[in-house]
Length: 285
Image (tube, rainbow, N blue to C red; front, side):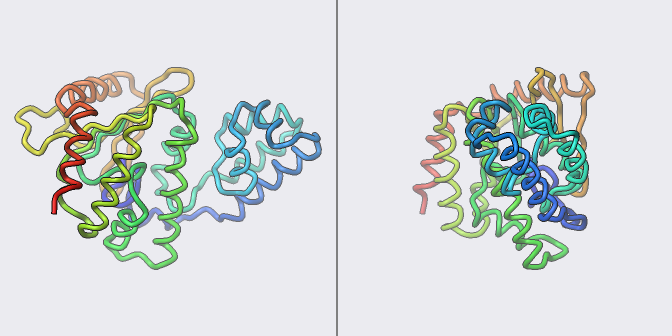
């Protein structure tokens, strides 16, 4: 979910109150690179051994991507790093531009086998364009400074790489029709947003369904939700309010969220009809 209006999965003005120094990510990346070079491995060879993509390895070494716990453990073993990577990773508990309560969920997203999102307030962060996201940040209250806006925007755009870098992850989005009709940012921003969502919706691992404005029965009246399947096939849930987010492992709660999401899938338009509605909205004056 996209934090209440602005942040993705942790939306709040205070999300930049405790920013993680970008230097810490760069330092971690340099340590990884140094041990990789010491082991006489190319990025391609290293990527194959730790079972991550070459672009992901490059992003981590350049300090542009937050390393998952699984990556740290695999890299430790492959590079025989004497615990150095584990030690360095302990200082990477924060991520710039992400709210404190969303950071754990953001880390889980990086390894998810499935990620389901229902959003009724706005278009979720993973699907936003830069122009749309910027307008959300500009409209945030209390107002954000220019540096805060740029930090949050960079975090959001970086997170969106998951959609293309993890082609084996199944992404499902159920979106209300009305956030598109609101025309946040104006007609031009909305048109670009619709084009962007339609472009993502045709990817094999992404399913987008719209919930019509007029719908007599709706299983999502409790509000936005996210569901995630981990690499060991456990399901987790995440729900977010204006200034807080709650990650749940409780099987009963997760089961309830799954039940509601499954019902919404049957209540929303099919992916094909959703694309048709998006095209119709895109063609509107």
